[in-house]
Image 1: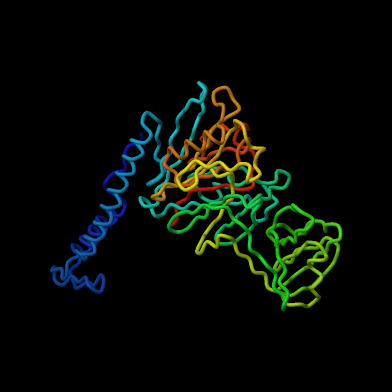
Image 2: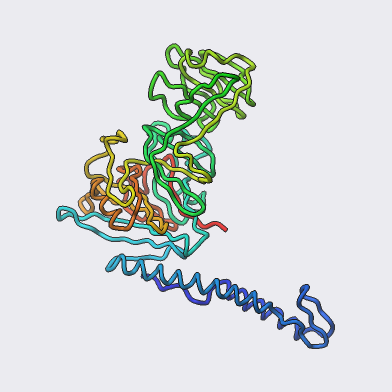
Length: 415
């Protein structure tokens, strides 16, 4: 395990340096100097003291509390992962490498634990491959662009285009809606929540209220009315049989057609059955109202996955309910979760090789509970499973360096 952080923190060093600078100014001064409203040197006599003593005491108290929390976190990790390789990524972030055995065969695991109580600068956030949803990029490219310390592959995505399949919100902006109402994690300033997410979206036009079934997702049913924003790309998808496209710009209907339409930069295109969209007329003023259920107030980011692994402290693998039977069996896996005191955990399990056989969802679920997760969920896995830590790939993905991905879930430091 890496050496614990020195008790001589950066903040204490700053205070020490400030005193040196002020003392040097005192020695060089022959006349009255005013350094600040409450610092004055007259004929070699300092009045009042060089530094506000109460302010220093409060700062040092805060530093001591943070340092005590950090030592507690280090001890917690050391005791939790005995006989494992433990690396310090940054203050409050640990990387653990270990091997577990299932049916007498090895599984190589990489685990990240992050504690925002130890380091309030830690931010967990999803990152998209590009400004539009139809692009892919390596996890290294996404992490470096975001100045991230850690990253794992994120939500499921459409391999052909890179569109995330499920709820994706970044910096309070909803990019895509849910698929089969799968489980998602909400990321808040003060912690995390996890639930199966539904879309509650409507287009309001006078007395009419038109249901919007999804946003920026591939069509799952001919009966759905879908909304496509500029995040999708420049053009809306092809109109379904007996369907229409309604183009809205600056809150007003500007076109109704059966043809594939350009998506206005300051609007969107509705694509759905004509029976759903016939109430709309050219020049109608409309308002798009989009919410999620549950209505997570003040949520910053949402990332979708599935199935659940741990729900309210109990192993809960609802693979059938979330229509994810295709990802059963033993495979490379990626999962995320959080403890009752909001420590965040992400994990990758290598597979499809002799030295690491991967995990079943049940095995992964029991292990996430063992790690202390009160809620946990599976992310995209298989060939997508990859973990990036401080500039390098930490695990051994099936494709060296990892395949091109639609999105990633990252840990960064922000002031």
